[in-house]
Image (cartoon, rainbow, N blue to C red):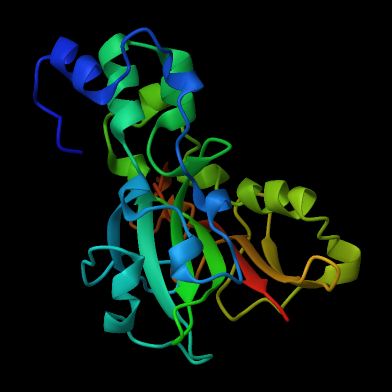
Length: 248
């Protein structure tokens, strides 16, 4: 955001926050995207920030100016182009300056229900927004200012999958399969979660895909092989990825 670094009183006045609480101000999120509609119908470019080419729910790649630059990103196998974006951070900055813990928990980073996310738009060659992708993001675990925002840690990222399954009525016994455990994959403690789900919702003209993981990959261990009495740190995968597509 452009106002960072200025005196706080100037920030509030210039941003129009004088006399208003942060939680009374609208901030656009991934849920404000209009799937199945052209880019002209989407929120203005200034409502989001950090546009870049996406990487299947991973780290941002080539920087972009807005969704309108989607053609600069490579097409995926299905022909759609992924544009990564972030939520505007102005309200987070104001909440930190005010020491407003409630507002900070709501507006810190690009997050939903306290889970840090990598979000992206999926756009076809005609400039129609066909889908949205939401993937849990481990990066805030390495930011010193993430703890005071009460964001979920990477160890709990798999729980975002349960939250989205409940939101979109994805039923594990009906809509999901458990891929076989791969060679070298092991539980994290007593838990091993490897779930891939698909649900069609014709009346909503939507299709949902959800993947959830909590496991140790080949070569990962809970204990240091050089010192079996010492626990390792971060040697596991905990993740969830949701894809929502507009259907005809």
